[in-house]
Length: 161
Length: 339
Figure 1 (cartoon, rainbow over the protein chains, first blue to last red):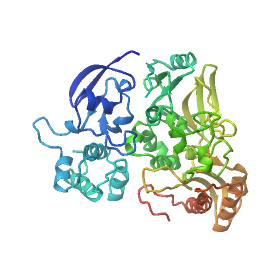
Figure 2: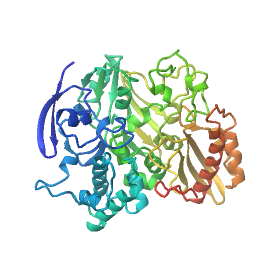
Figure 3: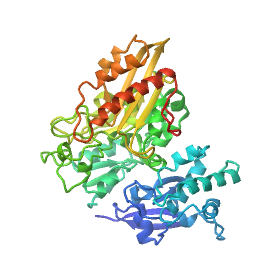
Figure 4: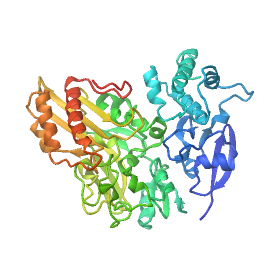
């Protein structure tokens, strides 16, 4: 069956390629583009390790077929820092607040947190917890993840950094 | 995943034609359930028909009757945070926010939510029998591990439950599903959209092959003053319901005017008992009348080895949800304490 041409912007870089219809965005990122920051945890939309931003919205890349996202703008954990290498405020906060142990869920947590900050609907720790519930952390770093997100919210005065 | 062809029709008519020409074709929109089923080889389509580029299906519009018409491609997130839905149909917003995760709600479509499939472990495991997956092979859930399974309306062939939260609210709100297919358009009352398993558990809905759910229409009555969505599950977030209850009430002083109650997690479809609802009309809103209603709804409930606890849980959840709705204090989906 035919390969299908698609055009994607990934971390600011326009890419054209041909993909089989059954290729997920997660597999494309990791296996073909060598962007292995995005992690394959469960591969079934149950853990959030594969979270990336598509057109500014957080989604599970494991449940996304590339052929359906022709023309989309995609940001992965590799694209969060600025071009000069300065980390995104949420990345700095994760380090400062020790918001991870093994680190496997961290790329998904970071992309999810960026999405959450942009959505602007989490005003209390309860709301942050609920709106981060799509990202599991088996090391149990949840309290520090919440603290890191609250810190960035305070720093930016509620606006998305 | 099996190998399949991919089509990206430009309009609804082309999408219907593509599907009609291929009995093995499946429509896809958000993909949050279908892609998962592809990975497990539960679904093995010959062709996927991508509906996401179809025009006219991604808006929420006010109807002449004072309700809302929600296009099939509107995401779960978009519905839950639409100002009109928040104001007039807070029950629907609440049910959606009780389900899945922000990532999934950002992708999941309205139409796809209606058509998502059961999370029965045996349905997902192609190494086991399952009448829903392969008709005639048997139902290992009946004598097997059945903690998450149905207590109402099941059959000797299937005891699976429908997993949606959104659909439980839509059942309580008496929504209508608008459909387009090879034989034209039709409107399906929500109660008739999903079906009970009976002798054909492989068929989830009354949608025919090639038909597309294009919109969900809400009637004007939204029960905004007296409603709740109470969802009970094994963890506080990001889990399917063991039991959920959607309630909408019209109150007349201390008495119930009109009552709508739909249950999730207990049957092959969102469960409503309109006779029981009618019985609450004119009754005092108190624990006694609510318990009597719960008993009536659950009179035909049957428990299996691991899920009999759901009967008592549902009884208490119905009473609590009715109390919350009558008091005008709906369940919060972020502060998880149940009051």
